[in-house]
Image (cartoon, rainbow, N blue to C red; front, side, top):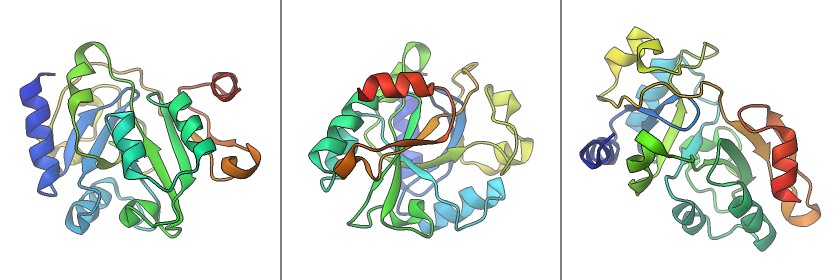
Length: 203
């Protein structure tokens, strides 16, 4: 991964293209969060039902927090303890930001900030948020290598970035929508970060 790769990635996203890229967990598909055309293409490539939500990925935690100014102080503190990392955080979204990613409930948004190091570290310089989902047919096996991605998906994207072999376990999905008032949280999907590690970070 080079700075030139990252610049190409951002250009692709900025015009509503669909990119295949490496994260800190598995390979993903990305497009501009407010591009209906990009959203439709990404979902069609996966065969994903249009009402199923996706996440918005930022490549820097400060950019994620700046994009969601309505987050309460307690929730923001939790975000700072959990991100960057191999987690997707479900947070309250009272302003209805990034509606294409929200599915049927615009008041809840999934947020990702990957922990990028080694060969993937240049991607952490990207400043353009992306609507993202794993690069596999809906319900299919997650891809840890570019070659593992379904050939039809690879043929349908505008850009492919090869980050080598990834860990291969998807992000842990953590529901923080009730965290602001009572400190309550739950794991919706167990993934790369264990429940014990989540609890330790939120303690």
